[in-house]
Image (spheres, rainbow, N blue to C red):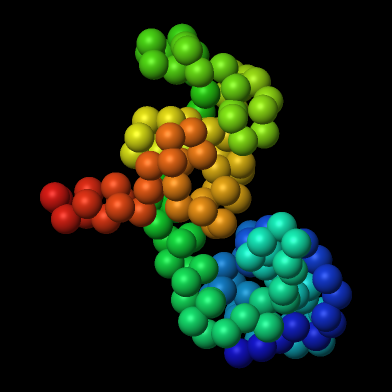
Length: 148
């Protein structure tokens, strides 16, 4: 189902729809308000390449959905340097180079490195390796499923 009335370019970062509408919510929105213009999600496969979601093949859409699904299985939390000793040494996100602030949303990778949630989610949409140690994230995730 396609309800993208206007093809205005809106950067929605890695094929996310504005307002955090899921695919189901977007379909429902399109059925209820067919005359509304919904911004077309934009995907950035590389920093120099921009493609509208309507230009992606079915295989590309499946690959993106699989990546998003794997990313959602990685644990997340909030930065609290006083909670345990492992986080005391880590003071900045190596992706954005900004210091962590108490309460910042973070995501933990299987290699135990932590990053700002938005930074690492964006990174993992392009590369499924840890930016610090280059450990493959998907292999660790898949092996954790096999052991359970």
